Length: 219
Image (cartoon, rainbow, N blue to C red; front, side, top):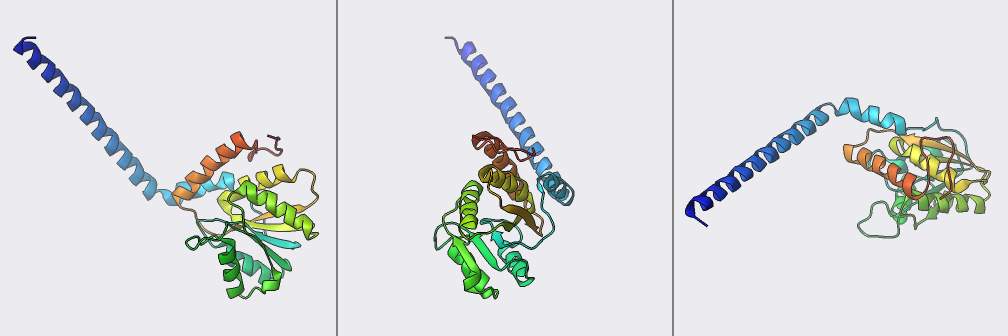
């Protein structure tokens, strides 16, 4: 191979690298610009993106108030305590994850927060092993049936109400328990919203839950 060929090959490699670097920089600048625009307009697009997910209803009397675990915006525990104080139900059922010193959504932690807010321990029921909305639906419906509840007011965030309602309906099937979903006030962060849309797609594929349809199908 001659020196001239080597020089030509080296030149071609340098040109290719320069071209790739240019496109990487262009894409990076574009991504930064889109991020800045979305951040600046979040007060407009986030509420618009929440609207299709929100099927919450005004609070009403029920046998049990159910606080779904997790979160990310607002305060489900505080809202649940307020609904209890308003006399909307004589009992509260909380679902949460197993004990973990670093987990602020552990059921025991939520229980302590409720008692600190003035809810009597005798009025609190606990399901401590739920790690997903599907797990919560299975555990909550079984517990409601065990205590003879015929109605429940389920508290969660607005962006979670549609998937939660569809999941409970899928699990519930013929169980004659009247379920109403009440959303916690608050505007979600972008990451909460993105995760919810991803979770919605996952539930459609994996569980056969159809959040945007009036019926559900079995998996």
